[in-house]
Image 1 (spheres, helix red, strand yellow):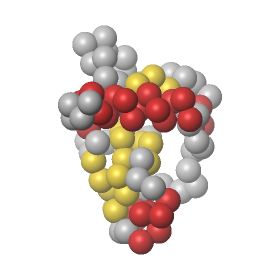
Image 2 (tube, helix red, strand yellow):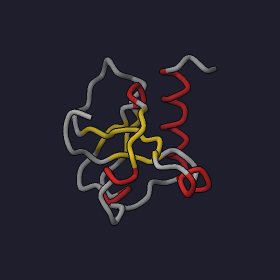
Image 3 (cartoon, helix red, strand yellow):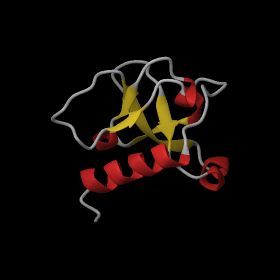
Length: 94
């Protein structure tokens, strides 16, 4: 990744317990209208202080050692579903 930024871990807890890598979606504070596949995460969710957007077009993996602990927080089930929909759209899985 280009800089230190918050992420949403999307790989399962079961997978994460056995793998050295985790699957993540990076977040940004920059809203871009042309990227409609970026899911909004409202301020307060996931421990974020400002509205942020999940960069669903940039799903990647990180080694667990590169993550900073403790986690900032969690996002709602609805937000996680929006992120999943953005990923499906970005990869044309629907």
